[in-house]
Image (tube, rainbow, N blue to C red; front, side):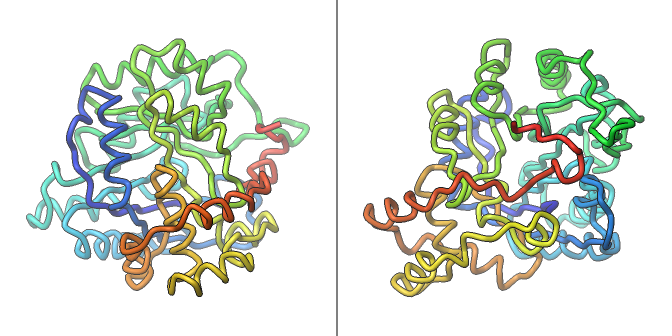
Length: 344
């Protein structure tokens, strides 16, 4: 579930003007593809553990190197909770020191974890230290909830005596966001955004923000289209990034018992019609609705396949056909680990 996302990205307008940045990112959405290094240990019933990279740090560094070498420019989405910042930082340092890439050709994103809402600057600096960077291109609030702080960099999801996520009710999302804005003012971060925010929370963020969120990274795919949220964000200049554009994979099936839209007969039929894979059809659908899609794969052949979605367009009829598949079906269910449904 954690991502190392590679892309050829234009940096135009991203430093100060968040509206221009979001629009630029949308315009460049067709350049995005992704890769991932992930693994799992059995019987680890914890959301942070589910996201962690259980493969070796060497493997993650190798996957990052493959991504950097395969493309001219490199964008990386990591997170404190994914436990991959230090390893990616080593790969980035080697790439920069060797002259393989320049910092201005990198687009680095990481995320603020739930337990650090009251310690935003410290958490950001901790991530920068691990990534061996002086600034981030984008910093996201991972989830719209503050939980009990257990130390900067410690992303365990603490549960109370009833086995329910220990939510901190003393820190508002507005307070967190203003601390995020201060990171931009201090030069530690160039752009800030949100993740897993619904319409109500996104609307509130727009109301109290001095710097509006550049991005809302959400789960959205043909079985979970969230058209109202997508259109609301786009109307207000917020780039929508789909972190699960293919409807989840084997990990979601194993942990949450969910199914992928790629197995749907409609996608199999469209794949045959367009001479593409079901995944390419799903990615093309996401692109044509003006969302940024960040599929995850550590395999070079899959990276290449993910890029081969720009030589065709889905017809209006087929877009409507996929539109009719919406089941409001969320595949990522953190309630399994947290004992509470934050989306209720």
